[in-house]
Structure formats: C-alpha cells, structure tokens
Length: 288
Image (cartoon, rainbow, N blue to C red; front, side, top):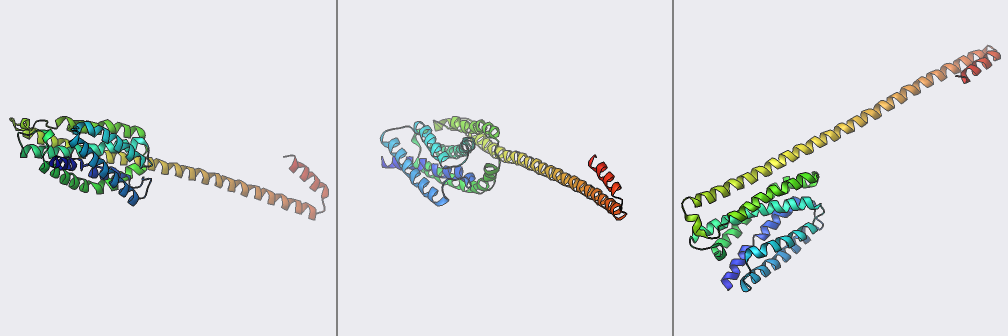
C-alpha cells in the first residue's frame, strides 16, 4: 500500500510543473501578488495531490476517472486567480495540458521499456520518478519563452475568435496523447510499434512546438498591423487638426488685414474732415 501510495503521489506530481506552465504567461494578469499566490497554490496542490493519491490507492479509484474532475476544479481555481477573459485562460490551460500529456506519455514509454509485460495501471515507481523529473526539466526550459512571449500575447492581443480557434487545435494534441497511451506495454514490443510510438510522439511534439511559434508570429504580425493602423489613424487626426488650425490662422490673418485696411480708410476720411464720406463708408461696410 505504501509503495502504491508513493507511486501515485509521484504520478500526480506533474500537476506542479503544469501549474507553473499555466501561470507563466499570466504573470501580469494575476489578481494576487506573486508570493501569496504561489504559497496558496502550492498548499492547495499539495493537499489535492495527497488526497488524489490516497483515494486512488485506498479506494481503488482509477487515475483516468479522477483526472477529469481534478482538471475541472484546477481550471476553475486557475481562472479565478486571473483578471483575463475565459477564452484566454482556457486556451492557455488546454495548451499546457497538451504539453504535459507528451511528458506523461514519455514516462509511459519509459515504463514500457523497463517492464515490457506490465500495464499502464501498474505504473512503476521508477517511471513515476522519471515522469516527475522529466516534466520538471521540460517545464523549466519552457518557462522563459512562455513568460516572455506568451505574456506579450496575453497582455496585448485581445481577439476572442483567435483564442477560440486555437482551443480545438491544442485539443487535438491532447486527444492524441490520450489515445496513444499504451494500456498494455507488450503491444509496444510487437513488430515496429516501439518505433511508431516514439516516432509519432516526437513528431507531434515537434509539430506542437512549431505551431506555437507560428501562432506567436502570426499574432505578432496582427498586433503590429493593428498598431501601425492606429499610428496612421493618429497621424491622420493630427494632420486634420493641423490643417484646421492653419485654415483658422489664415482666416484670422485675412480678417485682421481687412480690419486694418478699414481703420486706415476711416482715419484718412476723418483726417480730411469728410464726415459724410465716413458715414457712407460705414453704411456700406455694415451692409456687407
């Protein structure tokens, strides 16, 4: 029982690096300060992992039966910690789950190599430790690009249909890993199944990475285009304001010139003592 408990505990450990991967792009969108949020999340995840391992071992709950429930609760908590709309948090959550599923399947393949006659339900302690270490290393490698480039998209790009369109794409990779998980390890040792398993796993992982890079550059191009359009709009507004001010100044100068000419004419007439002409000039001016 104790051995099984530790196997389950290490199996569930991947939730910790998964949480780090989810929060990395959201570093500027957190409701709480970083330190309180990290402490609270670590405590809750530790309790959740311990509880899941306990129920899995002592109540014979299947890992795949517990995982959807835990994922739903984890996402609700995750979204509650953020200040962004649902479509951004859900897209990021599914993408992180897709990446983590590759790391879990890598551990499954490692377990199948160690114990060719075993099954997925008899996940070994060695494979569980390998999964914990491997997923931690991979997530640490991803934290910098996720925090730098991912946060730029989350902070600056706000087009709901693009995020909604990305969800089924990430979901395809997640579904692929759920379907490819070997239930019986002996199947991987038949003919070229081992090569097909690792080849497809590597290919799809590389494809997911390429899609993330492609998605970033496409969205960055959209943002730069929008910024250029906004700058052009501001320039057009400034140009329109400048032209209006220039027109006003020209009209003002013209009025001042006409008024000055009028005063000069009146001065000449008054100096000549021709008041009748002054009267006539004023009547004509007022009649204009």
